[in-house]
Amino acid sequence: MPKYSEQSLARLSTCHEDLRKIFYEVIKVMDVTILEGHRTQDLQQKAFAEGKSRAMWPMSKHNKYPSLAVDVVPYPIDWDDREQFFRMAGIVQGIAKQMDIEVNWGGDWSFFDGPHFELPKPHKAR
Image (cartoon, rainbow, N blue to C red; front, top):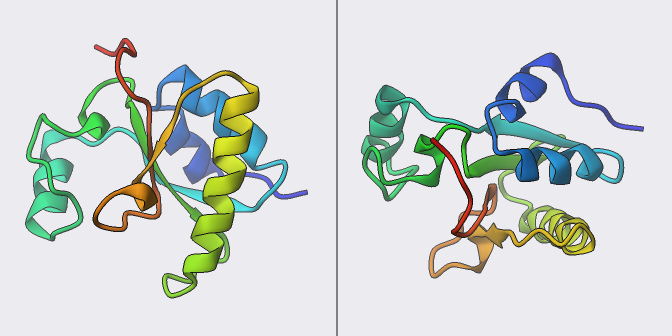
């Protein structure tokens, strides 16, 4: 059975408890890597400058603490294999539905953000 690395667990620990609940179950079904949870102002501005985010600080759900967004990729990472991202999204959305947690996937947007999952409002974060 797959398990998270210490780095993935540290990143996931910066996320809202509902995201943690979902992804603690996802890893039991599919091997995934947590790329990012909470983003500091410097990291958000860098992501924006590199075109990896369309939001400037503090407008991203990654900027809340705990983070209302998480970036996750199937492992091993193959950025060209979109099928794996769709498979992962189905697993994530199915698990979230079973837990009665609403989650949005960035692959459903007008631009493809396959790693991105976020909680819709009204979730509490500081």
